Length: 308
Length: 301
Image (tube, rainbow over all chains, first blue to last red; front, side, top):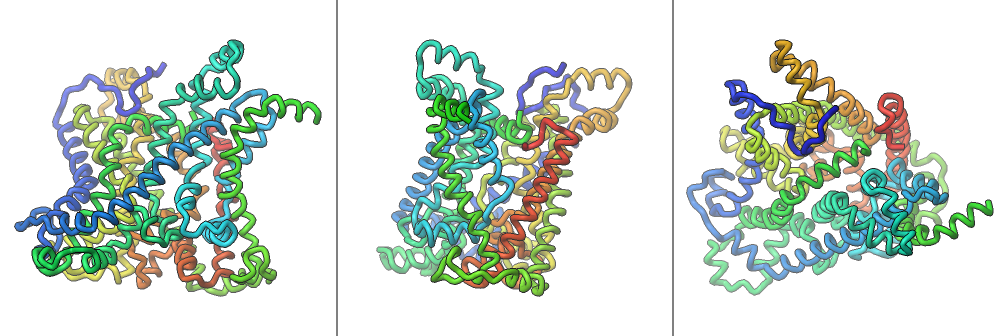
């Protein structure tokens, strides 16, 4: 007779905080520091004076702070903005369209008297068991589809994944009463209306969970970008980050950075602090967004791994 | 048969709704499967996969003869799978129990939120964070210990380094799943145990751990299905793809990625790729079969 509890945290058992509790909390704190301090370091390094890093190495307690790294990054603002635009477009478009097509697929295969749904379920499952691998995919996408340097190759490969469809299907099967959809049909709502006006709104928690995981996957995808994207104006943030060394040099030498401004940076390119600033810019949005989605993805994760 | 067509026509709306995802899966996942035939071909850029001439098992003969690369990357793939799975599972469980046992709930929750963050940082960014710790001239490790170790050219340290990075990135997130199981344990069980005079460790040993066993079993078995796949970013980005480290860091996935960039050895690589996919399939079927026997509810299919 297990009580239904918040999945995020175990129930608070009535307990006194003894010495053991303080020791436990201390170790948890140590692990938290291990996990989080490297993130703090990127922030510190972004604002550390370049020469200080060169001489004393990276440190959590620099004696000399500086905004040169940040300024250097802001100076190549245009390219940064373009990359931000590409990443945001790919993430938003891919996630929204992906959620829609996966929900429709999940809805269809969960219709009970739909005979084709057995075939479709197997069809969905096979890619999880067997796949063509990176090389075959690369050749097919570039030489047969001619999609080299196309944003479609950032969007489509991550759009439909078996696991996500299974999560959505499980949610429809377990959490949305079939009677509700029957009732809508009796009231004269067509198939599409039933799906869009009854089912889809009720799927919100699972959509939030899957959507957040998808958005993270899109945002963090560097591999497809590295494989396929060659034009500067189509490069997403992750690729900008991978090419950062080249980018910083290029931008400082070619963009309209006045000589005086370069002199103000000490005549050298603040590559360490500028790189760390870019890292912050790339990882920042997810770190800000994630606490809001935490409770959803905990549930999504549970459903996905245990299949309800 | 007539019934089938009637049924399909009746459900034409559902067919139509399934179509977009069906097509994406077809073009993105299924067509490349057919492309695997290139493992049996002498690949020619001009002729493409399907136009290139067959050369039987030639590619596989080369594969088996090349101990240096093929055997090594397979060994590395397996080695890292074993290390990551063993260490990862233990730490996930320990962390989940620790957070679950902590009575300062607010504090535990905040710490958990911070612990999960690394999983959301892409490997393209992680490599710079790692660099800040281990670079030769500016790395925190070298500077604070007064060493000048060249980590990026010392292969022997990388199994340890990569394990630490992997643990750092995934443990906070990995423990969430086990915590959701712990949250489902009836607290009356603990109360009863306490009345019977069981101390904390006994409670963990006799109540908490046993309740996690099914989930641990399922997760371990399912992970067997992806032995041949690696976290490519970890091996490609974090190592800065340094060639000197390959003996300890090259895994199948990063090898294939490199081969694509070098535009070379496609026959060999295709054979490797097919090997990876087929072994992956067999392991997946095995894993699912085992789960089906032990915890039928958790089987994938």
